[in-house]
Structure formats: C-alpha cells, structure tokens
Image (tube, rainbow, N blue to C red; front, side):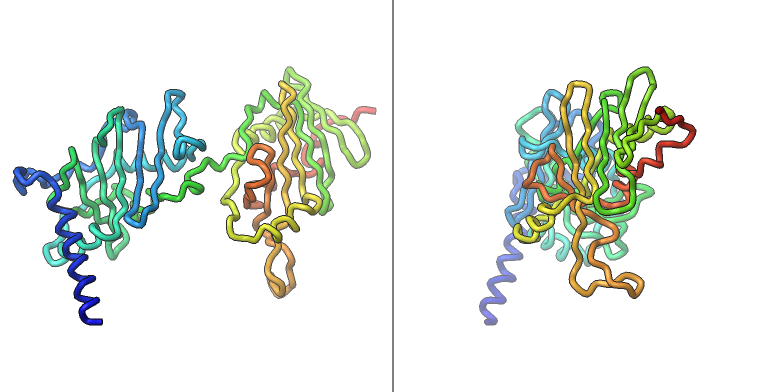
Length: 345
C-alpha cells in the first residue's frame, strides 16, 4: 500500500514538472513569465477549444455567417459565448501566487485544470489558459498562461474587476449545456396568429390574430366570440416570441416515465402560425413530484415552479424543463386581452 501511495505521489510530481518544463529549454525563466492573459481584440476570435484531462472536450466555432456552433453542429448559446469573450477581454491579474502555495497550485494545474485555447483565424492558438481552482475567498482564480506553445513559468491569481466568483465555471465542456436553449425565435411582425389552449385550469383559451396595420382581433374559444384587441396589449404579447427558451433538458428520467408525461393532454398548448404559413407548436405538461410531497403543509402532485415542454423546433427527443415564471406570460387567459376593446357581434 505504501509503495502504491509513493508511486502516485511520484506521478503527480512528474506531471507537475512536465507541465511546466515542456517548453523550449533555450527560453529563460524570466522570458517565460507570461502575465498578459487578456485578449484585446476578441472580435478576431473564431474558435474556442475547451478540454479537461479527464477527456471531456468541446469546440465552439464561429462560421462565416457569424453564428457560433457547438462541435460544428448546434447553435451555441449567445449568452455563454458572450460571457467567455467578455472574460477574455476583461481578465486581469489580482496577484502572484505566494511561494508557500506555489508547489500545490502547480500540482493542481498539472492534474486537474481546464485548458482553454483561443484561436483567431490560424491553426495555432493565440493564447492558451490553464484554469485551476478558486482562491479561498472565491474572488480569484488560479491560472497559467501559454503562448506560442510555451507555458509560463509562473501561475497567477486572476479575476475580473468589480466581479466575484470562480472564472472556471464559465468554461464548461458539456456540449448539451452549450447548446442554444431556444425553443422558438420569431419576429413579432412575422406572426400571423397565436392560439393558446388551456386544458387543465380555469383560464379561457383564445386565438389572437394579426390583421395588419396594427389591427388585431382575438377569439374566445370557449364561447366563440370575436373581439378587437388594443395593439398596446397585443404587440407586447407577440414580442415575447422573439426568444422562448427552456431552462435545461431532462436526461436522467427513464424514458418510460417521460412517455407517461408526454402522452397526457398538455396543460397548455401554444400554436403559432407565421406569415409564410409555417406552424410552430409548444406543449406544456405538469412536472410530477415524488409521492408524498407537500407545500405549506398540503399535498402536491406536480412541481409548482416548473413544467415539461415539447417544442416542434426541438423535436420529441428533447425533454425540456421550463420555468413557470417565464412561461406564464405566454399562456394568459383570454381576459388578459379584452381591456378597452369592443366585442363584435
């Protein structure tokens, strides 16, 4: 057992040494003290490769159309890539690593760091970051810089001015998390009609139609009555469809349980028709909770804050979870629209 522990420690030390000294031996220690983590012109970055020693990796690339994609397939989250580019531009050094901590920091960089390579139109990265863990105060992040294939001889504590938190959490390798969470993106003026069906609550179903020239009408699907709608009410509602996003995808629940959810009548159903006669559907389903669950001392059977969702744009294999807080405004009752309107006979 002692021999095994000794071997493991030896391997860690070898990895740490190899990590720092694989660069050109002719370069002096002073010359390898790289501090310029920031990238001034982030608009030139067209590729970010993130990898971990465990084998996890993801490639985020920007094509000629300006759209970032995950592993060359899916559209990447705009907020996530924007956060990475902002970090690359704004990052600064908070302080050097103290001599007492230097050996342990080097070991962790060598054995458990996240490697981030930034490319700008060439085959070789313009800069490579090795991101380790956060400082004890969770304000700084231990990092080491590599340029032109040469690693710096010193790691540093980095941070962003006026911000707190671990920078490494921004550089994740799960491709599913990188994927754009949009369920639907439509320009308000391109929408011809929106039909909302309520199946399991007291809200009144409706169909809102855009007649053009800022004229709108709504049908109460319960009594089949037609009502003109104030554009100041209709337009803000339609603007919500500029970006409809899920929170995350359920990849853990067994398919049998998911089938039992999606085979039910939707709690809410949204059907959108655009001016080109393209049809889009989003169905919302109650999210079951564990038997015996309670809220304020009363039994509950469904999650009061989230729902399952189906989107015709994502397909039946994507079991999305959406927050009620964001989706309730998309599925109002008919009565929401009838303020200052006149019912047509």
